Image 1: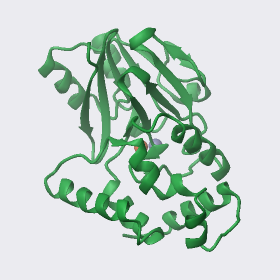
Image 2 (image 1 turned 60 degrees about the horizontal axis):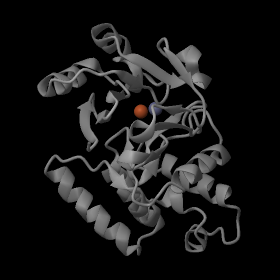
Image 3 (image 1 turned 60 degrees about the vertical axis):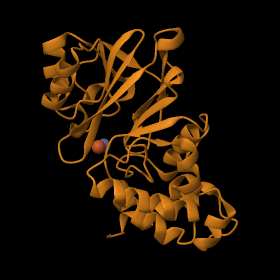
Length: 255
Ligand code: ZN
Ligand code: FE
């Protein structure tokens, strides 16, 4: 049975996701309840589980309402349990939910927050990364160190290239402007930026994106590339230091 993934725009620029697989219906994050309830109702679906990526309010504000309505099982990172809505199951790195084609693997990807998790669905070739790896970007380092985030991004980068990356926000157009300041001559990036502008002018989402294209265009994933090191004036520097410099530039960037 094919796995269906529905993108649900929430709040200003957040995305929640609904995954309908062989084991039932699973929600990824709950920025607000109403649009998720509407998306479920229009399909006649009921969620069985809800996976939380991290404790920020724009990812969990709708959790309690959805649980009360559907009685779905709420899971999230054990490392942030004290800062999350009540969890029915607390997850650690490498934990597996479900079996066979319904398998979901919890991947600990700290940096944005200390317990941030991504959820990998091998049978769907999909990974839900929220504010860790984002389309042409990565989350701000609110809690973790650059080394930590670099390790997290490297873990995601090692997934199969055809994996689709579902991040938690529509930030891609601004991320593209920044990425071009790092690599103005990257042809794959230039054409991706054009496609992003076109998609946004038609009100379309730019998420998800295939991991192989992220690897070719996302400056934060490319910190280990000798050409990137040269472009930021850090030839020979350790990967994590180059990543830290790119992150620092992004923090100071105004589109
Ligand atoms: Zn966040
Ligand atoms: Fe967020």
